Every structure is written in C-alpha cells, then in structure tokens.
Image 1: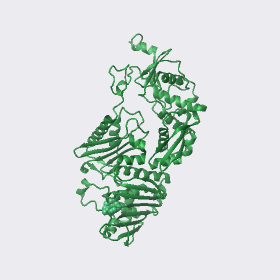
Image 2: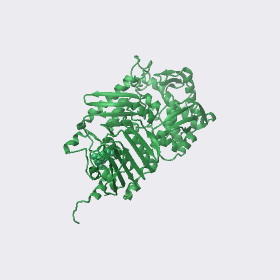
Image 3: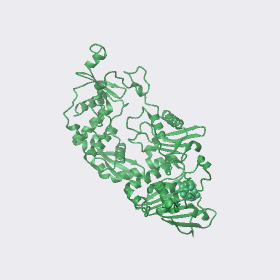
Length: 576
Ligand code: ADP
Ligand code: MG
C-alpha cells in the first residue's frame, strides 16, 4: 500500500482517542478553555451523564469571528508560539487539540463573541465536518455545546460506564476546580437540576462549606507557605478528621489538578504517626511554582506532571503541612506515666517495645484484610479469663491482670469488637434504630450526595435513617441502638466511603463489612481518657465477646504477657 498523509479528520479522530476518553474529559477540556479565557462565571449543563449533551458557557474573552474556524482545527492554539514556550506555560491548555478532537467525535456547536464585536459567530462541526460560520447575537463569551458524543465511534460508546459512574467523574472534576478557582462562580446542572453552585466571591472556605458542609469547612486548617517563588496554600484536615481513602486529597499545581504520588506521599508523611493505620487526611493544596520546574506536557490529558526536582517538592509540601498541623493542633500530649518518665513526648515514643519472640503476639497480627473474619462468630470460643482491671495507660491501653499474667488491651480495638458483636447478636436494643433527639445534617459534594440518594434503602437496612434535606444535604434521623452516642455524621460518612470504594450491590457479607467499619469509627479512640467505670465496663463487655482477642478487622485487641514469659524476660528461668 502507498504511504499517504492522513486526512485531517482521521488524524483528529486518532488524537481524540487520547484527549477525549469519556464525557468527563470533554467537560475538563471545555472547562480549561473557559478558565484560560479568564471567565469568572461558568455554567455547565449536562444531559444523561454527558452522553447526550455537554454544554459549557463562559463569560471569558471570547474568540474573534475570523478565528473561529481556526479554533476548531487541529494544532491551532492561541496559547503557544514556539517550542520555547513549552517551558513557561501558564495556561491550562496549550496543545491546540481539544476542540478539534471533540468536534471529530460529536456534533459540536461553538458560539463565541468578543467585546470588540457587536455580533458573535456560530460554527458547527459534525463528526469532523466543519460548517461555515454564521452570525449570531449573544453576550460576550463562549459557549460550546457537544451533542451525541461518540455517535460515530461505536467502540468508544461501548466502553463508557453507567450513567452513574460517568456522572460521578464529571462531578468530581467540577468539585475540585470549584475549590481551586474560588474567584470563579460555577453552576453545574444535570438534566436541568443544579447540583453544584459556588458564588465566586473569592472565599475558599465558603466554597468548602457549600460543597463539603459547614462542619468540615470550619475544622479545616489553613496552609500558607511561601518560600521565594514557591507557594503552597489551601486547607488540610486536623488529625481528628480523617477518611478511609485518599479521594479527598487534592493537589493543584499552577492551577491544574494533578494526581501525583510524590505529592500525596509527602502529605501523608507529614501526618505520619498522627493517623491510625488506614485513615487518610482531607486536603486541598494549591501549589504555585515556576512553570519551568514542572513539565506538564507528559500526557495528552495533562493530568500527570513531571518535576525537575521531586525531592525538593516533597520536602516543601511536607514542611508546609507539618507547620500547619503543628501551629493549629499541637499533637495531643498523652501522659505516659508508665512507659516514659517525661510526659509530653510524641505518641510514637510511648509505643511499647516488646523484646520477646514475634509468635507470642504475632499470630493474631493479621493485616487488615478484606472483610472481618466472617466465620469468627462460628469459631469455638476463644474466650479470655476473668480479668482484674489495673488501670489505663497512655490514655490508650487498659492494663489488667488475669490468672496467667498481664494483659494489655487496646481500648479502641476492644471497643470495636464489643460494638460489632452487639450488632451480630442483634440485641433488641442493639440493632433496632433509635431516633436521635437532635437530627444531624450532613452536606456532601454532589458525587457523594448521589451515593446516599442511591443507597437510601441500604442505610435503612442497617438502621441508619437518612432523609434528603435540600440540595446535597441530608438529615440523619436515627442510628442503630448499639451506636447510640456515636457521631451520626461520621456513621453516614463511613457508609458513603464504603460505597465509593465498591459499587457492588449490598449483600449479606457486605452489610457486615459496613457495620464493621462503622464500629471502627464509633469506637473510643486511642488517646481518650476513660473513667474507671468506663474501663470496667469495656473490660466486662470484652470478656463477654465470642472472639475477644481480635477486632473485627483481624487485628489483636490485646497482648498477653504470661507469667512464664515475664519470668524468662527477667532471667528468672530458661533462656539465659
Ligand atoms: P488549547 O486550549 O490547547 O489552545 P483548544 O482546542 O482547546 O486548544 O482551543 C483552541 C483555541 O480556541 C484556544 O487556544 C483559544 O484561543 C480558543 N478557545 C477555545 N475555547 C475558548 C473559550 N472558551 N474562550 C475563548 N477562547 C477559546
Ligand atoms: Mg484547550
């Protein structure tokens, strides 16, 4: 066969494969264009998760009439002049590919007017075929309407996920940009219903409040870090506010949302030792740095970046976050009477060092595996002997004496176990719902709100009564009796997080998994001082459990130092 240069339409369709993967990528490109055009009002209308229609309307500078045809052709951009410029990109776009790509796989209408012109123009592209430009009256700004995405690429259509999933990707994206661009007013509508709206008045905490609820916005700690031409600003959660996944860790570099391991791990490093295993902070961090030090031209979708010196970035992010954590919420000072003579040291240092063989404690030390050992309830009882409470240490562990030695009990893990078994047993007072005296409200970003809406029956099933209460806001009316006293909002949060990670429908085991996670959230924490009565009660409840030795996730609730072991350790007997 002869070699030919591909016709533009074909080349565009191939390029579109990289740039336009799904409705959310169209939204992303159009939104970036609107922001590059300096818009401060952006309206996004979506129909059928973007599969039917995506429309982005902005009040930016617009496109001059005589350049509209260029705008929709390949490698046409106003943002880049030479290869040199690639090292100092200040705009979100620069590849000149988006409009051409989108136009090649949809019916696209571009409407635009600049301030200099009385009339705007309209151009239509159908599967890469460009119609001629016509005059059209409209306000200054640009509107791009994309209908029937992938109508001419059936293979792509087949790869799209459910409306629910595609919609969530759009929502996640807009939510992030709405927090990053606090001076821009966003309005996102799905099927004519507004699901996200920000005022654009420049107050980022207010944006957080409208998207994530007042409670979260109030608690977030401010990060403000400036070193030369390196700036990190934003909000991070205090150590008391955590999530079970990393989804709410958001980084922007020079105005662009990036998902980057260096950034995430530097943040997590800053929190190290302050969060329990498996818990993650919430963070919105906006980094500004010289464009020359970060390469954004790594991938057509521009979501990846490459740092010239990633170690440097790592240290700065870590430092900025540490500083914020320290100045706002000094690490709780845990009195460590028994293990450390000087109170006020970091918690890390009071970790009990045990100089004896692994297997003495190790057999229960399983990693947190998928689900609770479901079968455990059927196992022969691994009960513990009657224990005599000695007291609490480090506000984290109970110390007790049994007939065969000393027991150290992790109060959090133990309480988790106790709650979980109350649920399993379905004690009348346990599983039945108990109305809250004061219903609690919870506001969530749209993608999470949808999860609740779609799983209302599940909530009911496990005894959590939730009602819609305004846009993206819900009211918790009742929680299961065995959780009375726990924070209802964090209970709902746990269930949402659970569904975020796994969208499969609820099955029997699934229910247990969710309950196990709720128990974890509701259980007393390490670092919480308990009264002697509370300690007694916890110990007693634990004694009554069927599987008192592990928490529902398989980690040990207790360490047993047998008399035998003590004697060996003190050199009274054996192993000299
Ligand atoms: P890129 O953004 O990489 O330059 P695009 O294909 O997305 O490429 O857009 C091509 C050009 O069309 C842009 O460089 C810009 O000049 C113009 N343009 C696109 N969208 C808008 C908009 N919303 N407002 C103003 N100009 C726009
Ligand atoms: Mg663009």
